[in-house]
Length: 61
Image (tube, rainbow, N blue to C red; front, side, top):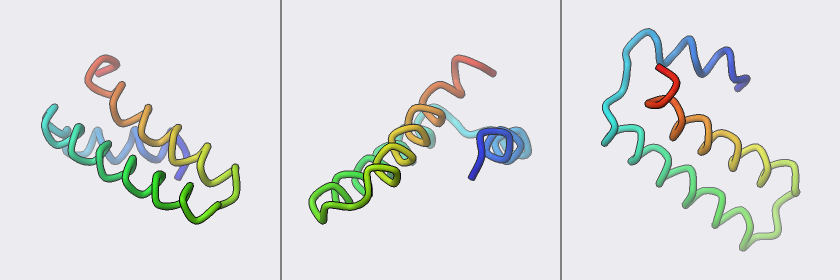
């Protein structure tokens, strides 16, 4: 998902800080599992960027 798509979805129904943190934790777990299975670096980078995007939405809104 692109940044603009994620921003649009978050604008439809803003998440609480707790919800954002929970989602970021889930993405981190997915990334860690993918890293353990030696996933493509592009996937690991993408999951890292998604996590960072979610965590910064509280600051950017």
